[in-house]
Image 1 (cartoon, one colour):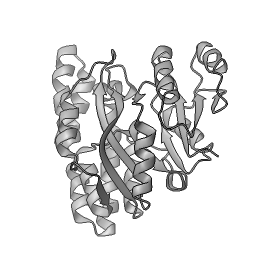
Image 2 (cartoon, one colour):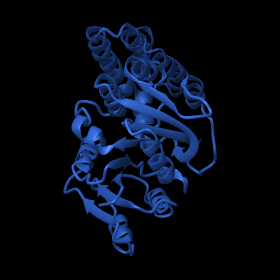
Image 3 (cartoon, rainbow, N blue to C red):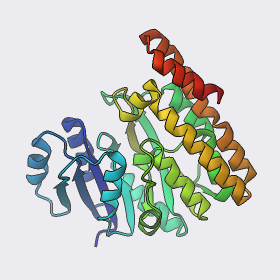
Length: 294
């Protein structure tokens, strides 16, 4: 059994996928298993490319039909064997120290359920960038020059204020993520929902400041498209209402208030209003405005 299962749910750009996979192959820490779950991408190249890799640690399978991102994450989780799990973004990049960093952090914090390493945002061309949303995340993320431990209401409140995590860069205790899993009713906020479920369950997250991961942000992503046409915010609004009720019932008033206010989500919608006005998206304007004021 490997120490880390790198799950690789895939649907998208073939060349970026190859770069992402190569970044796993190039890790300093080599006790891993790469599990590729192709969600029916209409191109034979991924199957050919992975099939020609001469590495028994790499497995490739293709879904008979397209499941969608959330269902494919859940499908991938069924394949976990190792004590630690990473759900790798198919267009992101691990720096060579990534797996060593998260493995060492789990060893130093044996009660940790999730580890968030240091992240640099890059664009489609691999250039380091700092969009407004990521500058906000950087300011809002708790942290220090040394690892920071978050748990319970503090963890939930902080995430609800700004959603500063980078989902593909997270490493998980396999027993925790497979037991709690993704909520099937969400297509955009499923990662935040999972982290809040872990917080509510008494779990612990460690923020490790060492830079170890490159997160790719580009306008063609599913979340970006959903944000511009308002679908993301319709889901977020419903999600935050559910979370406000849950945390109020748990007796976590700070978390409940943060969910009710969902300030950064509102600010994100407000920032996109200008884009929608420029593009003449009347339906988006209405949806985005509704999210800002509700």
